[in-house]
Image 1 (cartoon, one colour):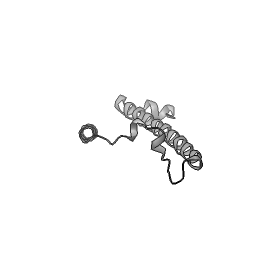
Image 2 (cartoon, one colour):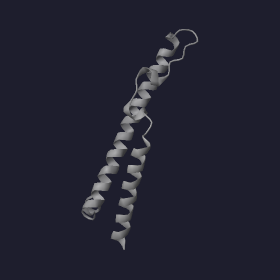
Image 3 (cartoon, helix red, strand yellow):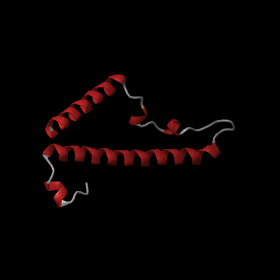
Image 4 (cartoon, one colour):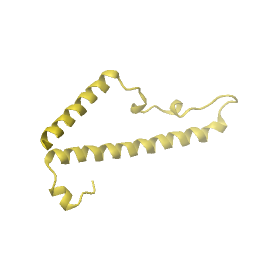
Length: 94
């Protein structure tokens, strides 16, 4: 997470948990970008060998779990969780 000793020891446990979650999310997004880039490259490499008039889309080659459209209910749950954390943070600062 690239935290210096001063930053690390100056954190509360809740701050560290949030930093760890953020670091994990950043790492996951980087992995997604690598997989997306590989899928796109494979589709472009296969395009000249496709039948005339046919287009190969990256999603035709493979589908990733994050390609599915998010469920509205899941978005609502995430919104409620983020709001709760924001309220807790405000209460701590007061």
